[in-house]
Amino acid sequence: MKKFVLLIAIMAIIIGCSHVDDYYPFAVGNKWNYRHTKITPTDTFINSVDMEITGTTIMGGKEVWVRAETWPIDTTTYEQTTYIEETENYIITYLIMEGETLTDTLVSFPLEERKTWGNYVATAPETVTVPAGTYTDCWKITANLGYGYGAYWYLASNVGVVKSVFGGYDIIILELEESSIK
Image (tube, rainbow, N blue to C red):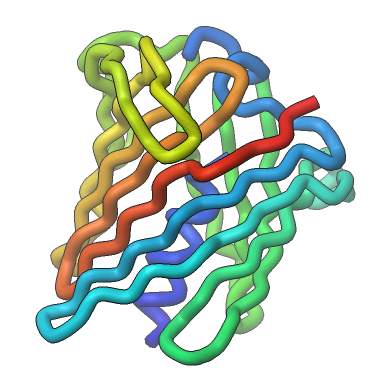
């Protein structure tokens, strides 16, 4: 279960490419709603994931954005908070789980084709269609998450993540249904 929650946390972090503000629009009140499809070996579940920037706080002496998230897991709803630090060169995330702070550098700017950092690689921009519409010039980020899990997601300018796919034992797909960006 801890690995699954960690995967969900990584997905949430990813959801929010030249400059940080272009691909991760941070402002209090920004909201995203995603269609969440979970495909297991025996069934498919479809519901929603909601995310909202609710403010800022200080972590380790640095100001970070606070994003409240609501995730469906099986028959319950899981609420979590992700802390996101933006710098000129990186998007760094912090997730506190079971008393541990998990830190990850999710994006390294500027995004360039075949650029790698950690377990991530950026590939050429693509056009992506999701329920919220068609987005051009989306950077595709691919990740090897370990434990047999892999992922990729698309970042659209002034929107954030418009689609993400995570695979392992189960496959989880998030597709943007609507957003409210200030």
